[in-house]
Length: 173
Image (tube, rainbow, N blue to C red; front, top):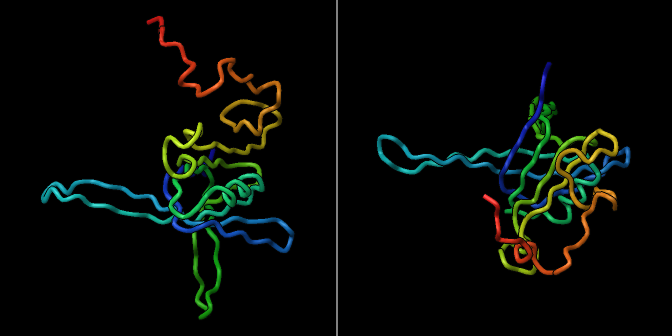
């Protein structure tokens, strides 16, 4: 059994770009930076290494989310697959590039930044989660409220306001 799955948590290096293929399908592309930090054992100096990843989204719904809500610097969680493609540059040199691809019926995109980039602005506290799977109408796994059927959506709490204000502090353990 072979598995081709990539999970990235990083920041967008540029605003998403939208292209339309000859077939009419849209592709959303951007780059994501992941940074690893550590302390050098000999000098005690902090060191960083940043890797850049090209991301291409062929999934229509995830592409719309990326186009609307993602901007340069946005923190995202991505699940996709690695794909390597070859092309010829303008000088005729054969090149290879590897992309993280979110396919039409697979992949996940979660926005990790809060709305407006800061906490405490309205009732929006976290990012959104958007995923696409090849399965039928199953509600297994994570999905956004937009993807759930009305029967799966929970009714609004009677008290209104933020969820943290409505939770009972009497924990039985």
